[in-house]
Length: 454
Image (cartoon, rainbow, N blue to C red; front, side, top):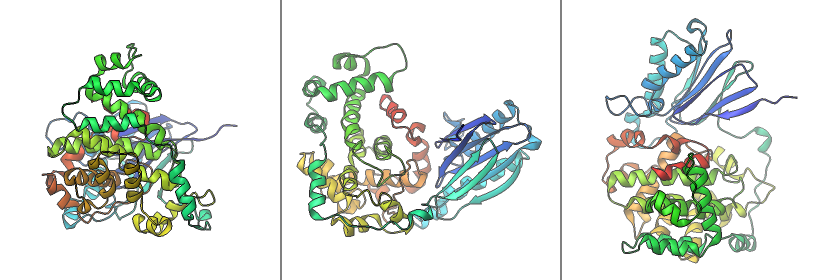
């Protein structure tokens, strides 16, 4: 018996295939997805586009990000692989506002501009638009069954069969056990985090700390060999890694290795798929680092570390979600409730407070504790306002472009003021998104880890 497999198309990419037992799909928020297929000749595909056009006139490095450059490329390759233009049919989805940011965001309207640009390109190419479902405030999935050539658009929500699940709040004792049972981030890695804020710390001192932890050392070497390089270079010691990779890349590898096992303790209470919290943290680190580089208000390496760690509280709360209601958070999101308020009601604390508690127990640097606690409400920051606003904006970018598969919404009340706090303007927002590496919008944590070499 053969089974129809599903392949996810990440933002800024497309997939083309002949008739096969496969369904391609894209999770869409502000992004626009376009399925184009020729059922007669059995060729088609799906493209997931991020922005309407490049920020600059020059042909972009990653043309697949943009409707105006990526969609013509997608169509060209469909025809090159055997599709006939007169047979092509298109379905367009996404381009949602997701949630109003401010009055300025409505004017910016990246989602609406994405959809308009897609329709303009398809019309210019004389391709039949069979169905359009764009705009609104809701995320959706666009899929294309490549055996039957049947497209489908569905809101991202949970099947009705899960609606009967009842919420049973964990007791204080259960929550205390969850905190006690969590395997902490190794002290060697935490010491590295503190050393990163000390300009006088040499890499040799950092490497000597890591050598004390055999598990992290082994994990760092594995990451260096499996994720960073595809050539014949073999890294088998931290000294080799230092020589070949350099300080910054190796430090990122150390941090990735430290959080990998930690986030592996999470189930699926917060996420649509296992491993999604880890992917979210890695992608957030990349985006936070890019924002820090743009603003010049925070050290990029510090922002990267904060991006990795900002949601550590979710892991301990996830441990407290009983197996009888694994879809707890998905039901909450479906009802449109505020996630922090729901966490507070059920657990007596939200994931920001849980993360602050863990970070304090593990002696994190104060600036990281502060950003973990205040990343959803940066106005609460007491120590590192620039860092907290960067992580808040990182969360907003993740939610706008649905780069991860968890369904957590982000408050946007202070979006514009957060940009101003780090020296950026709302008019520069598309430019900022445009400069984020495509791998940050993927869905494979190992692939995203490659970004530490950039």
